[in-house]
Image (cartoon, rainbow, N blue to C red; front, side):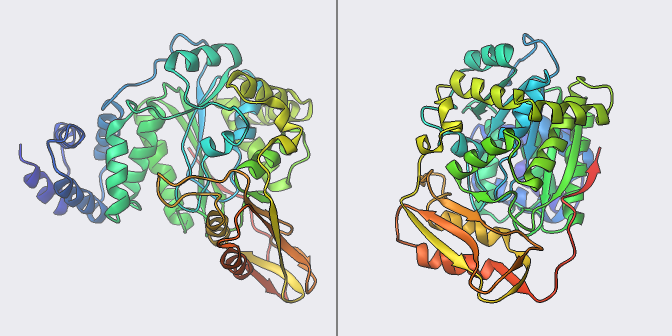
Length: 434
């Protein structure tokens, strides 16, 4: 079997057999296939696509390229939640405790920020002392005791995906739906889960810009799960404005804490409850989806989900008091207001530009080795559809260094569109797949 022949066949739109996919994945992971050949293969996939069988083969090969987590010793149905990434998306810190409070076992394996979207691990590490580098033994022990644990991907978990993702990032092949879906699902299946709830974002602040592409991605991932005997449901949700009001690591922890105390923004609360309800339903803790929604709301209102998050923070070395006393979290030293140039209605907020502006002042990273300032970010004062006066505050930038504040403030101001007419109300949850 020769790599060049497989590249040529994929270029010409032919289907590769499972053993041929295995040859490519294993060869590249072991260093026998060079970057230039795998780059050519990825570009062939980008243009020719993949069949369902090929996507499943690729996912399975990546899944078994390293270690997998065996959670069979932890009783209960294991359900995770994954978001494809957005701006201000802090649902993990709300959804996971809600589901765990209802008795679902939630192994939360998360990532770091790259590009304009934030990373769950970076946000959690803004809590003083919080550890995400747990050993597999610590991970399983905490799951058995608390039903919830947040960790990062280990070096030995799905190494093929790590190598392929780095190559996709520099060869303009990131947007390929077969490659995205196999990347996400191989990591999630390696966690040892039984079921998965996906939040597929669409809009200016999302990776998928159109609902058609978001639906195709959701269907691809649900299909992979079904073929691997896992229950998977996907919500396609709007990301044409940031979710909630806070963008930035410690700022998002504050907003998640407020939401778990039933005092959060309406959009964030609504989406979190729906995602949690689907986890509770797939985790077999409620007979119907409606009963699962009622259970999720109960655990929000009675404070048990908030208590669960505090227990997890304590177990992972963090200071749980930081969830009540926000002065214990990293706090910015400077603040800049961005005001409306005219009166009218907020008709659009470009979420991607808000995310990029937040990164400019240190909330995110452009390269993996970049460091993050957990204190900085942006807090919106208005959302789409709200009326504003000339000179009223649209948002506030919180910073610790003045280097790029002017540039960020200018971009943020341009991200807000003020119109004379009130825009039509947008649905937050656009459709369900699976």
